[in-house]
Amino acid sequence: MSTTKFRWGIIGLGSIANQFATGLQSVPDAELTAVASRTQDKADAFGEKHGAAKRYGSYQELAADPDVDAVYIATPHPMHAEDSILCLESGKAVLTEKPFTVNAAQARATIEAARANNVFLMEAMWTRFFPVMAKVRELIAAEAIGDLRIVQADFGFRAGVNPESRLFNAALGGGALLDVGSYCLSLASMLLGAPEQITGVAEIGETGIDEQNGILLRCAEGRIALLSSAVRTNTPQEATLIGTAGRIHIPSPWWKPSKLVLTRDGQETETLDLPYTGNGYNYQAVEVAECVRAGKTESSVMPQDESLRIMETMDALRSQWGLTYPMER
Image 1: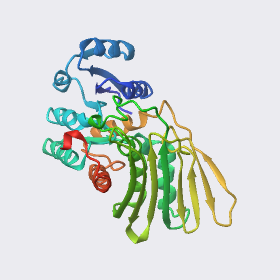
Image 2: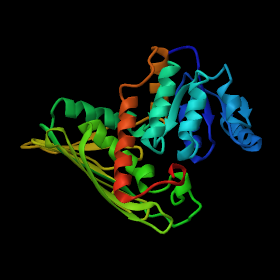
Image 3: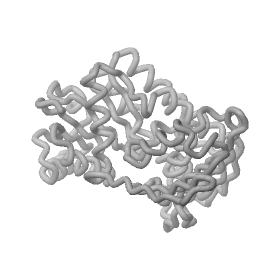
Image 4: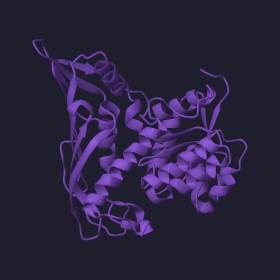
């Protein structure tokens, strides 16, 4: 562990930013140095709550601050690319909340900015960094369940329709796919790689966003992912990885996973307890700091090209559904 504090800034001070700021408190060598909002009052209140000494009423001021090592982008989906690029062009390492961007074109532009400026960039797919997911990668690599053939995953909840909320407002990139379907697609991508065939169906609601969807992906060597997500339907919120010699069940993969169930053919079922520390958001912060200090410009756990590929998959699905957002028209 470094004795020098890794200095964070946060742009966009909503609920997810509160979670991330709380997570930083569990990282001994991390410091929340600066926060920025569109309004000074909100920046002051957030900074007071979380102990940030610098509180800016504009994103540009934070991006220009020489005392910030990395910036967490927690603005609404359509602003991710613009706000990330602002910081990247200022030489700041960037952790961008999922979904990485609204579409693949924005993702490419963001990655290009990172590479042009030789600075770190990563999508904040926080679930990848929990001990449970590290164990999943280890078990799959060791062929603990044989050859992985099928990934089943769902993430759905029932929210009340509010046309102005980020979940139901198309202008904010609303809908199940970007908000929670991205988790399922990221899991499938992590385990199966790039899809060779993409098929999906969706129910488009009265506000013009996908209220629920079903996704079928065929990947290399005939491996398959069966995924679903929803913002108007409660689902079990679980994942099952099925191999030729067993399966792995993750009861709660998306919200602070702490155990998995391993079933190997001909053996007793095992429940593996894999507790996490802090509130879970700390793990991705640690990854960013370790990568930056090692001189890396991306993470091997959440590579930039993979984030782009996931956005391309979501673009392909939305094309099938006839779903575009106002900023794309």
